[in-house]
Image (cartoon, rainbow, N blue to C red; front, side):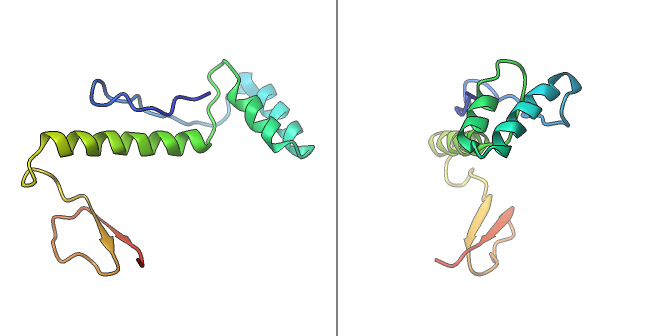
Length: 110
């Protein structure tokens, strides 16, 4: 099972790198496709997750890891920075932020 926990602030989380399939690991891809072709989606997911070699895949683990990393950074900054020091990273709302300090705008309808 892939690690979903962040090691921040004790360390910096390792960079996640994805590339095309390694030719030496094609048999894993074939095994996964075989299970998917037979309709065994859970089996295919478990098969890929339980490979001990360096085979990466996009799955819920990746989204959980990103969420945990963001939470760790947010917790750290809320405990160690004063409100004046905290960067205004994301503005959530229907209208574009009037404050130009925000780095990102996430549109949503509450």
